[in-house]
Amino acid sequence: MFFIIDNERHLNKSLTPLNVWSLAFGCVIGWSAYVMPGTIFLKNAGPLGTLIAMELATIVMLIIAYNYSYMIKKFPLTGGEFIYAKMAFGEHHGFLCAWFLSLSYLSVIPLNATALNLVMRAMFGDAFQFGFHYTVAGYDVYFGEMLLAIGALAFFFMINSLGVHVTGSLQTFLVMILLGGIFVVIGGAVLSPSASFENLHPMFHPETQYFSKGIIAQIIAVYVTGPMSFVGFDTVPQMMEESNFSSDRVKVVMDTSIICGGFVYIALTILACAVVPYVYNHSWPSYIADLPNQSGTAGIATFNAAYIALGKAGLYTIFASVIAAMLTGIIGFYMATSRLLYSMSRDGMIPSWFSYINKNGVPTHAGLFCTVTAGLICLIGRAVMGWVFDMASTGAAIGFAYTSIAACKYAWKESRIDIVIFGALGFILSLSMAVFLLVPIPGLNVSLSNESYLLLVGWIILGIIFYYVRRPIGGGGISNYAYQTSEKTTDGV
Image: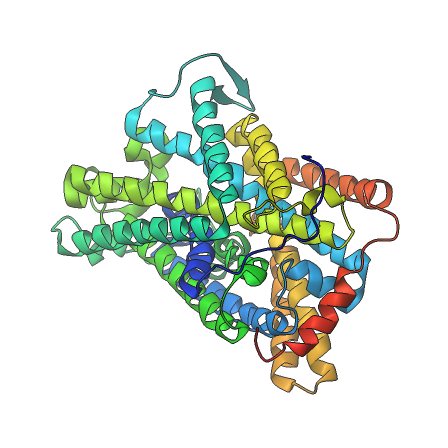
């Protein structure tokens, strides 16, 4: 029967360190990594401002990852932040953390799926703009493009159902394409006469009558994108029950995914302003300011740079890389979200339907929920989805904060001063990210839009209703079992 839960089935330990690294890195680098250099990074801070901001964000994420590695050793269980928050502070906090984190993870799936349409528009014009269409918040939604996005979601749902070893291998293959494309384009640009480090000047965005942010404000404007720029490394704990290696190796997996992610963000930003079309007289500020008036690949700075430096070969190379990046984002966040829902269900926080595992050791009901929900979100178009994505940054910051303060609490009992310091620091830094996003600060203009605020309030109200009305009475007992189990496996799985 479809709704019967088979408690004898369990998650399969099939993921290698390379598979888990690919899942984390593939989540960190998605469609936005290729777009943000032109739409956010250079527009707000220039090349040096972006370099400083992303290096700071990388260091902050490494501090937070230090706390994650400590908590993973204590609780090497699917659920990650949800388990940490619940065991440290109770089930109310566990649900709060998981509710916001699930929003953060889930929103990225349709964001990457519909980004397929944006790339197809840039590369092939209106090839997929067929069938009926409608407009939401000024964005045209076409049947053909929705068919492409939802078809991709359905395809990866079926692939995932075959087993985590299949999904992990596919993710690793796609990450190799992602990285290969970036290295080819960057290498080609370095050798191309079209690229010049002289084009990087001015290093910060020049102050004009239209732009008056000081250097510190420019750096902060990019730094606060950290939660969503690097969200993905924290999917590692969601995979721990399906990993076939010791939790002692987790820190290396997370740290390298963060460092490589930071490198890619910076490298693509430098590419975008080192190769400037001649018509702009080597002035990246003029070029970036005019990007909204361009169409096709000319409107995407990294795509345009690849084309100018390497011709059509460069364009199709970066096209393959960005397609792989979007697919890895769909796969990685799909797995993370479904495992988080599975863990919440197993713990009695949400209906037991979500904890069903198929014969291949996959929580397919949780995966089906992700697929259907993401598909429905795709129908509302990119404009509204952007509001969801913006508020999801808050969810990521909350997950980071709970993990850090939970690590601080447990480390205090064990007299682990290093973890206490890193935990407290990670908590403060995570909260600072949330404050920048939630509190309008004059001169920065980095807080959420009014639409995102309204959606965030709606999500909070929905969570309250879901927790107090829909959740099973009495909860579950997996956390006590998890605590006893993890205490025995602190030195490795």
